[in-house]
Amino acid sequence: QVQLVESGGGSVQSGGSLSLSCATSGYISRRYCVAWFRQAPGKEREGVALLNTDGTTVYPDSVKGRFTISQDNAKNTLYLQMNSLKPEDTAMYYCAARGPTQYCSGLTPSIFLYWGQGTQVTVSS
Image (cartoon, rainbow, N blue to C red; front, top):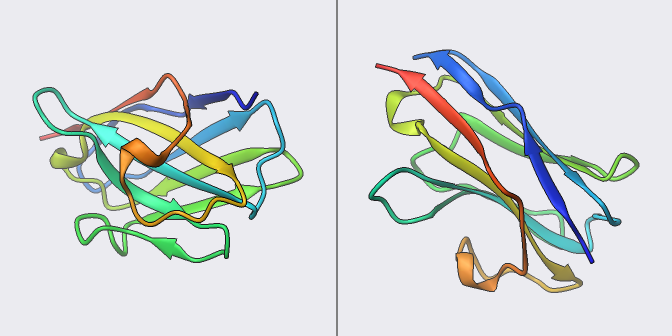
């Protein structure tokens, strides 16, 4: 089974940058739909980046132009580069994967099979 472990979270000032990593136990390639989600206390889990099986990416307007999802297939690692961070970006961040060859219809948590434990990102006000 695929196992995901996030790292790279921390505290940063508004306008700063962080890079999150998601190490996987199995082979994660372009044939997997992978994504990053975040959840703040009292808020719904929100998708912030998606890399689909066809190589296309999806970002919500809230992070578009600031966040970039990528993966290193040789290292079985997924990344989320976050720039120009804002206080509203403060949340627990989770990586997720759907399944081999399964195309993702969107950033909907219910369609993802595999989840990491999360890493905290805090952006100072």
